[in-house]
Every structure is written in structure tokens, then in C-alpha cells.
Length: 504
Image 1 (cartoon, helix red, strand yellow):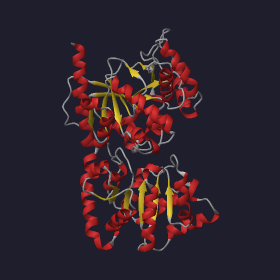
Image 2 (cartoon, helix red, strand yellow; image 1 turned 45 degrees about the vertical axis):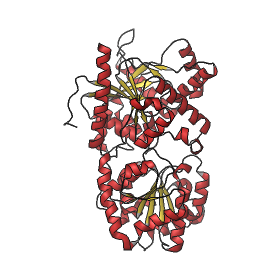
Image 3 (tube, rainbow, N blue to C red; image 1 turned 90 degrees about the vertical axis):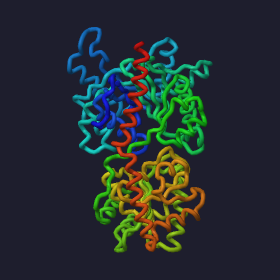
Image 4 (cartoon, rainbow, N blue to C red; image 1 turned 180 degrees about the vertical axis):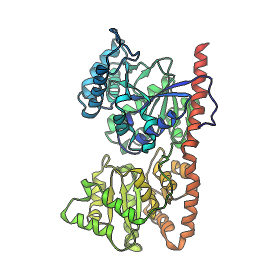
């Protein structure tokens, strides 16, 4: 980062950290990595926005540092911070109760104020709750010493309020007071307007809620929230930074007017993935210790079968998939291909699935259950990156079979870890993985089986080694040192230009 030129004006950035309160991978992980990357650029003043998706938060400290009665004593400051922490953890006032209040305030012309969260006494909470799932301990000081703002209103309540306005015949969104910042970066379409001097940047991950609504959870609300917030962002002049060119093309197919206000900056792969020497016995241990307790130990026989499957004297050979368990990820086609391979050529080949249980997972788990009970399929959860890179390295292949994606980092992580990748032949995979993966038709089991055979067949070891070499070269394109200068150039060129224009 020290090779970057210093901008004429410092850029004050407010980054939405709400997604980081959730799961390990996907948008939550990218939120953590982007916050870290921006925090490492000294010319940027980066702060995080604390906001719950579903629950109202307590009031933080005044943005000015003083109340109308004067400065708060230290004990009152700590009390306020502690109450915010408790509300993020225990969740008292739900968004359904907050939405009417948000609606009323907006109709009265009031704004949603941002208060401050002082991290000095609460660095452990900031680290554990927001960042520890994706960042190594060496990044503790980088992210916990930053400043944070608090939006008391739940994100979902903002969406609901906007839909209420539409019923009333009004196109209004809650207004967020962001006047202290040059730019606000939101990780999804954001359901609010912001201060006039602040430029809104939407980190656009995918258009799946609009183009493939049959594959998402809570379809009616998810689609409506995404569409109306996105439309408002487009109309308000927001910029869009898409995670892939395929995602940008999808966005332009819906709102072609943002062509000049959209760009592509790829996701960052975590620096915690790299190729290191390890023993396959370590992979066995990880599979034993990280099994999903909800599905791996169902009937009395399943635990015995599980240990027999992992601890067998035979070499551990497995296919690996890292993804939330939900229909769009295409687990069932993978299952069909794997079953054929087991029946025809590879009876000891196992299937390891890493990921939390997502929406509409029951039909998938039901199909997997007989194999789980036999100790042939393993479902794992809460696997840290230090262990995941071991699974990537020792897998016969990492499978990325999705029918639609915005980016799909699992393949890049596997390449960084010395693994080989087999991916569905969709535009985003071709863009991201280039010639470093074996491809198949995501709707065709026959092509899937052929692709897997082409990689795991011992007689084609040279092809496998070539894919691994290409993978290391391809994955390097998504290192932090490559991606963050693109963010730097984007923010300094567009935001600084806006500052200069406003100063005229």
C-alpha cells in the first residue's frame, strides 16, 4: 500500500458493518476484509457503521462528544456502550415495533441520527463479534482501534418503512445523517437516503433476488426489499462497485442508466489462505471435530459410521464443497454425480460439505441423510480458515457447482491453498477462475461426472498438476495488495472530484 500516491484531500469513509454480525463467509467475510483493507490506507479515515438487521439499538455518544449539558462522565459513556453491546447480543426491540416509529419520524421531517461508539473499553467485543471469524489475530489492532458510528434504527425497519410509504402513495425512505463523511459504502442496496455532501457507494454482490427469486429465502420480502432499495439508490445518484463483471452486466440489464456510475472491483481473498505443508491426518481430525451436530448424529448408528468412515485404514479421498446448504448452490446435482462415481469407479470416495444450513435445506439434507448415516458424506460447520485451507489442499477436488453466483470465493480460496477446482460453467466462474478450473454443465450430471473423472483420475495427474499451477497464478489476482489499490483509485478519483466540485 505504500506505493500509492497521496490524494490531495483525505477521504472520510463510513463502511456498513452490519453483515459482519452474521455468518463466516460470503458478504460477511467481504465486509470484514474490505474494512481491514481500507483501514490500512493512512490517507483514508475509515469508520464502521453499527446497525442491527432486526433490532433497535441503544443511543451511543453524541457525535460532537458533548450533550447540551456538557461532556458525559466516563461512567455514563461506558454505560451507553455496554447497553449497545447488550442490545446487539440480546435483541430487545424488534424491527416490527421500530418500523412505525421510523415512518412517523420521516413523515415529520426528522432524520435518523448517528451516534458514536467508543471502542476503547470494548475492543474484545468488536473483535469477537465483527471480525474474528475471518481475520487472523494479527489484525486485531488494525480493526479494533477504528471509530464506529451507531444507527439505532434496524435495517429491516427501514425497508418496511419505505414499503409503508409506497402504500400511502409516497416514495420516501428514511433519511440517515451522514454529514461527517465524504462517502458511505453499503454492502447491499441500502434502504435510506443520506446527507447531500455524502456520496453513496453500493457494493453490489449479485442480482439474484431479482433475476432468480425462486432460489432465495423469504422470497416476497427479500425481492421487494432488494428491488425498492436498489431503485432508490439508482435514482439518488449512487455509485455501484460490483464484485464481478458478470454481476455488473446483470445490474445493467435491470438499470442500464447506471452504466457510467458502475464499475467492477473483484472481491478480496483472505490472506489466511495459502499453500502450506500438512498431513492428511490433519484433515481426518478436522472432519471428526467439525461435523454438524444437527445432521451428522441423527440415529444411534450414525456416529459409529461417521468414525468408521474417517478413521478407516484406507487413504482418505474426498470431494469438498464449501457453501451454505441451499438450492441455488446445486448440492443435489453434486450428490448425483458423486453417487455415480462411487458406484462405477471410486467406492471409497467421500463427500465433505462445509457450510451452515440455509433456506429450503430440508430436501437436500433428506437426500444426504442415508449417506451421512453410512459415514460416506460429512457435513461440517464453523470451520476456521486455518483448518479450511487444510481441507482444500487434501481434497481430490473442490467443487463449485452453483447455478448462479456473484463471485464464489471458495474456488479462489482452494487455489490459494494448493487445491484443484471443478466449477459449473456459468459466466462468473469463467471470469474468476479463467483457465484454472475444470468446467461442467450445472444441469447435466453426465458432464459433471466427466469433469470430476478428468481431475481425479490417477492417469491424468499431469493435468491435475497443471490446474494447480494455473490456480496459484489466477488466485493471486485477488490478493489484497492487488485489489485495494483499485479501491484507492476509485475513491480518490470520484470522491475527491466530488469534493472539489462542491467547493467551487
